[in-house]
Length: 117
Image (tube, one colour):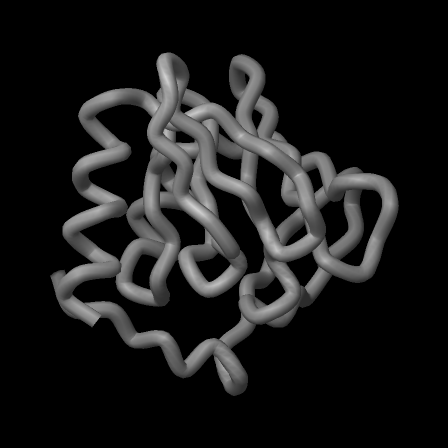
């Protein structure tokens, strides 16, 4: 898989509650969905940005920039993964110390991605 990891000049524009927010891709840790809502978790903010848009649509937009699905409801910025752990339940640890569950199938996909680097 080829990624355009030059996230420095790339931005994501989101619409929320009548406002337009422009987010630098390098500032996104991960996106997590709940129904039709997606929560964008940033490195710099304590609270996520809530957007009424399916995670699948974000995945289509961001996969070329190094965002990878780790489980059914989470899309992670691959540059923010600090550690990949294989235990009874697979996990990734992000640069901020957060631990996210990884599905078995996606664990191997992430592992392959790091080996290709």
